[in-house]
Length: 259
Image (cartoon, rainbow, N blue to C red; front, side):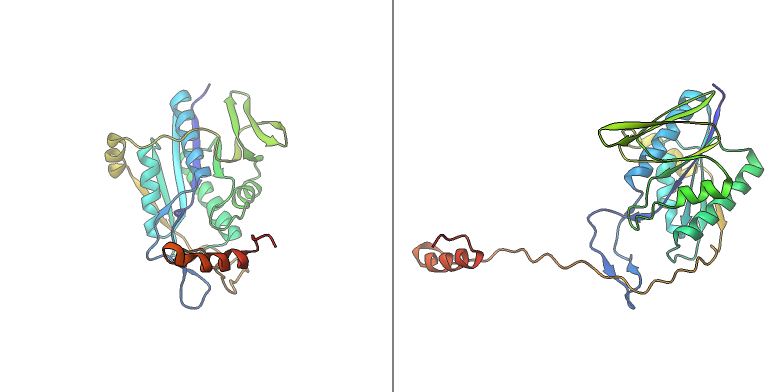
């Protein structure tokens, strides 16, 4: 098996469990008090890239398009064993799927012109914050490369790769030549945690910053709407026998009393 050159595209997204607050105007999320991470799909993509390079030799690169703060997610990927990181640095505004894919495809072309073609481009199956399901497919189309999405298992050999994805009670199997684009799902593998030496090494690994101005994609946000607040709570009905009448009233309101 010849050495592999792999690129993994990730995205900085709000951590699960954070309270979402809208900024003034109601068209953007106020991110000042949110924690950030990468999606579970992308964690699996990073893990798979590190495993494949460890087994076959080569180089793994991680890339993201986003604000300067996205360095945090790139450094995390570097601490897991990725060799190189590229930040397509934007002014911080949210960028749509079409513009994101165009910027990534252009960057991949530039990186390949400098260091040779990538055998594999890994993407998460979808962005957890916007659920676009588009970027990997659009990049594959722009670069004229085969693409398999929803991948839950894969094997790479000299003849290309074999990718598997769930299909009802069975599994679809695809044989694809390299280079190829693969969008993976959580469950592909069990991502590792960074070690202390890995975190220390990540601080000194090079970070390639490339300022970009993504092209306009024709989409303009009109507004965001938060889901209804959870109305659940606890009501004190009193203590002792005096609480019984109120308890009966509450049960009656809930419609659980037999008449």
